[in-house]
Image (cartoon, rainbow, N blue to C red; front, top):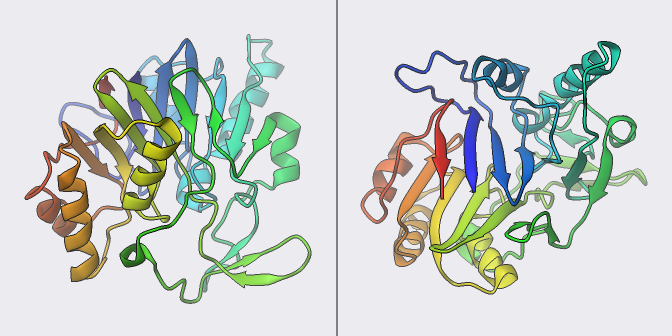
Length: 280
């Protein structure tokens, strides 16, 4: 599996690309190209073009969850595809894979909607939609995990004033049930690719091991949503991830510096930034 960081909060020295508080990865495995999240703006497209990477031959677009910093670029991707049609350039029609609640409006004051600006209906005009709570195998080695089982009490969080608008008109406290991740089977164990880990990174790892029937985990890359986790949660997360004996931990996006420092006491934390390429 190959992974290219198209957008992250950070940029790397001698990589003159754009960073933003969002996330977008390009994954290549099993003869397929998968775009995982689209960041907040069109930065991922501009960075891909600067790196000489085509986004018109994608097989899948996977959305980890519905928040703006992961779906904001969808509007720009649709425009990118529309330009290609108008200019008669060769274009694939990728499947968009996400949890069924991904496109539901998400209320978080002062924003009326902190979720996707592209509705499910609008997305269906450009993509073939595969919205699933259950795991979906995208290749022989790569799986979209669907709705994550939440088993660790220390990863339960209070949604506060976050709410989600259900199509039947109900408004519920938003537990971010649509938060998902990818897991890839490699000879050295699982590589887990996360967006924000709102479901809890330990919950995600446990569910990935169950779905893939493999307890070995060699790497985790993505946001861990450890911005202000509290002492107990951070310590238990560090101990759990340390027990995995990872070859690397590529914590990025929504992982604070203090959390990375704490994690580095248990795991081989590695730097991540826009333009970085990794192969397993």
